[in-house]
Length: 245
Image 1 (cartoon, rainbow, N blue to C red):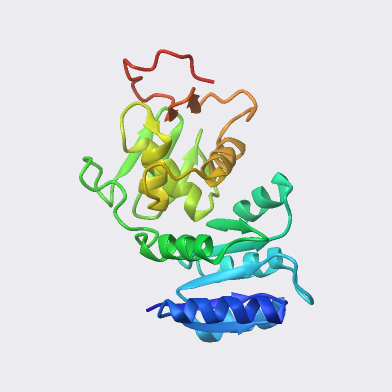
Image 2 (image 1 turned 45 degrees about the vertical axis):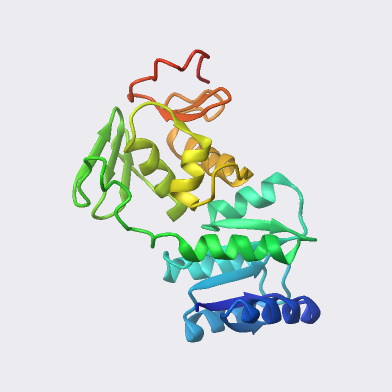
């Protein structure tokens, strides 16, 4: 059982979410506006937050930003009626882990919640079993990843990444050659094979915005066409027949 905080201003939607999540065995607290949501995040100390972006008093972006200042570990699932890509990217930049777009089915939401609750806590040993010690330093060309402090330096300058973007970078850095989309989804988000999500692409976009001199012409985070992604300064797979971009 997990403690879940639902921050949603529509009372009917909040009631449906609470009823369904409690049926899954979770304890659920509801806040009906952004200010109440910030207060509840302090008092409830949830294992997961479901956050609507369109909130009265304090909007969802501000709530997310405030939560992330105090807690980097709690998973945040966005609920949004917005379809614009920039809105979702902004949410990821502030530290959201995933999103569902209204209207959505409860089975989809329950699956997303289950995935977020199952995953390892941020800071767990992402590199274990692949020769990377938890207290070590990974260096790849201009990138330096300090595992103990979860710091990232690029060309000697400290880069601020959201927790999930850091996990994605470490997943790429800790495996040689190209990493498939399915492997990244399974490792970073613990999705089952075959599950597609634009979440991965949005976080790759964050890495490029933060690490590349020109995100439109990436030098570090390369796309391997129809396969996945790889970091520069990692060996290329012999099966990578298409050029990277």
